Image (cartoon, rainbow over all chains, first blue to last red; front, top):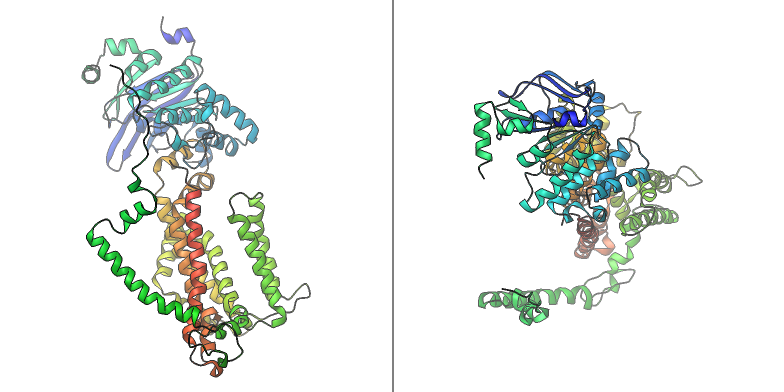
Length: 256
Length: 362
């Protein structure tokens, strides 16, 4: 029985990309991307560097602008309208490779900022929520410190908590463990696995952690040169890759 | 194999304490020792006579040059005219008005500068929005039973402070807007900011002041008369905001792209992300540059003497030509330099203190 059936993912589409094309100047970075992500689904996106995987997920919350095609998030189509973009960003959380915590604010303030200023929550409510999520990522005791005082792994867990405080429907992870020391990768992956196990959260994760993909993903997407080359559930993807390029990629990263 | 943690040992005494410091910094090798001794010798031979002149052989009080008999500095020239140097030609009965304005300002600033005072927000609001009104009526008068003191009577240190403080406080917000404008993606906003900044940076302040005071009245009809001080102030603000904009732009460019992206991704609007995320970090980086600009502005205010406003330098200079007190211009200029230095040094020290206090990156 596949994981999708076990968890009874709803048929509702949370994120949809239709014939999305994007260029950086003359360089065609995304070529006719079509992707449908159902509510509660967990997608891992992998591929060689420069294949457009980060660009693709950054288009979903308009950190990058696509030039052709449609991107629809939870029923709202991304357009140039600022209100529209802000509405989508409220529902889409993002975790970055380099954490991007705000260094002038404490951990708690980092987590409360958007709920207070974007969602207009009272400070006390925002702080209570923030503490709850900090506890879930297992660093409530660091709440009053500044980001610079924390290790990379701790900072990334704070970044995850900060995104969760906005109570998003979709979480985007842009290589969340690539900038971490080897000792710290596990603590971040553990938090992400926990989040996945709770169910309900739609996750799109760009990562090279194949172990994570095997345990968590409902679907693995392989990209190369701006295209989606292959898309399959993890067992099939790793054991029976269809495309030559995928086979080469897997043989290279799984050797060690 | 087991190993034990070794205890921490104290550093060798030759590297700590006064002797250690002397050895490391002044006498670390033969060349350094010779340089130290030579510089020490020159300092003593130069400083000795200067101190002798300024303090030991000096006269501090008196009504006329006759009081200066000791052969050194004649500070009586300064003390005798202190009122004029401070208040210009402001009527003597109104000195309390300047004192009150200054005292209120000093109190508000001290309140904000001291690290752990409560209600900083309210005091800042008062200083920025209510104080200017109080200050205006106190200094200029015209209401609350205070008689009008025309701005051509203002002068001395109080005029210098009015020019510098208003120039600094008003140039800051304009500078921020211009800096954001120059980084904007909207072509018209950007073009306006670039042209504005490049224009004002391209002309000397002295020209701006001349234009404001001499040329402007030629172009507008005679019925409209702008106050000369107001014109100088507007010129200074327009000029200074261009410099401020470039300092601020430098700070904005130093903020990593990831900070903008994280703020965007959380759904913050442009103004909120600027106000809450980017500006607080950028301003911290900009402190040295901003204070540098402030200090430059403070000293530049002395240029207003060419359009006939009597700031502290101008008023001391005019006192130098007083036939009763001829020959004491050295004391006058030293006094002016000292006053400027005190204020500039104060700003510099405060900025260093602020940098330390705002440091959150470890």
